[in-house]
Length: 346
Image (cartoon, rainbow, N blue to C red; front, side):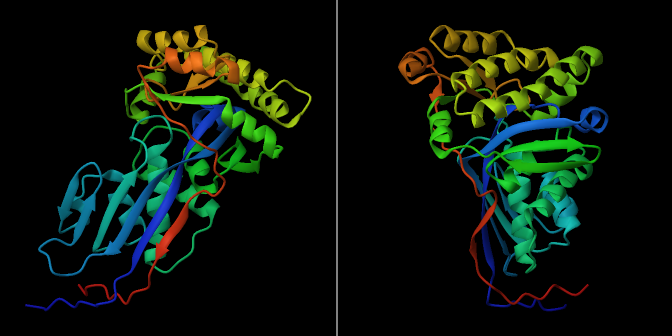
């Protein structure tokens, strides 16, 4: 029987990848829409992160790969892996014999692009494990390919791009391509915007791809009409942010408008319970808000002027308030050590 070779120097990589908050244009990042109509999204990454740790697994065990996320998997063959994104990413980049762990500041399936942030952070770690560098565009492109093609998961492109690039951006979509433009905004105005946004966790979680599939069955003509208008709100929101003479509270009012439009794009976007939550915040003084992500649950973000924030937080006291800050870095490598690794010869 062939003896296992073991090299003492083990490489460990830890990546830190932000989640995103999408304000305007969500839904126009879907291929079946933007390939024909073009799309635009205004979003920002925030200081809530997922962490992916990857190393080659020492050859002491009767399994060759160990994965720890919401469950633990120990397998001897990649095809035995249950997690579709991990399995397909390992095959795509020819990764073997690893221990991978996933941790996050916020729960999965909550509307903040968590699965795509994981995909970006995992791919960044895998490239580092192979001693290769992948720039922001490459990471975003391959995360999109991994989730939308290899895993065949329904959804758009904005989450992978936001997680990879980081910062507050306008992302414009055209036929099979996109362009990322950072939002140029005065630091004080950006801080004011951040301070006027309140995020709450509804306690519901859902799989975004399932919500997207449910919404695809709704009236195409009505949905396209709403998406067309939602796309125009991106430039309006950008003007509010960049024009110091504009009332920043108009950003909140515009959030209310885009939420009303978004609710028309699919029956799975909201429900009576979520509508009641939204109404409660608005009655307490919020100027606008939206459910983050594909819909169906997760996090609400509300815009409220400082004088109304105590009342909004009191009205939302049944739900977890989650403070956040905008961030600018995108996916990063926190820790990296070299190694000497020899693949097992077949």
